[in-house]
Length: 267
Image (cartoon, rainbow, N blue to C red):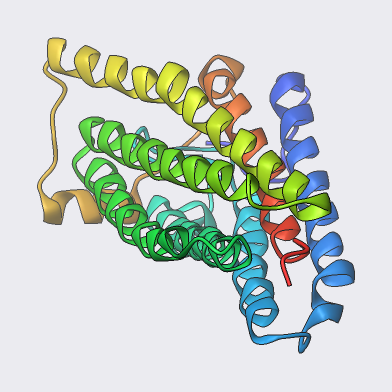
């Protein structure tokens, strides 16, 4: 197994990609510290956004330094910090924080657009995304990709609701708020398209492949033990290549969106 500090010259693509992730992580932490933290105390909503964004930024930075592929148990560094169980726990907290950020924004948008149904709809954002975490844990523990199919479908459906809400609200707004909300609707719609056309089908294919080859599944106790203890450290580009696109986007663009939610001009 490979350990940090060993020669990675034989795997330049993986090394360059990982270096880029770490540079982005440091940049994101600095960006949050210099742009978000000074706004603490501006308002109650801004305060919550800063805290929620801070958790998300910090967890994404940690995961950038210790990349993993949970179900397959792949990692780059053979270290307890690369534990699938630890990484999934942190990711769960971070993703719920991001969901709460989105819900706060949609609620505020409904208020300023004078559309109470949008504010009410914001209450339907966090629960399905918490449920999505449960299905993700199911996959990580049992090694069954079906949970990932449901998880990503829940994210797609929830973001579709967000897109509809923002698009409807944009019609009642003008100036900078209009462009921010309309841009958010387009961004959420693009996310839905990506999930529906690429992400969900990818996990569905993996699930069908595993069923055809009768891959074993683990019980709850076996899966939790396996997730805590087993990790396969590898720098093979063939293994990491399918993961690089979504991991890079997750740890860069998604973080920038989280930070930008602190600054939306919706007061």
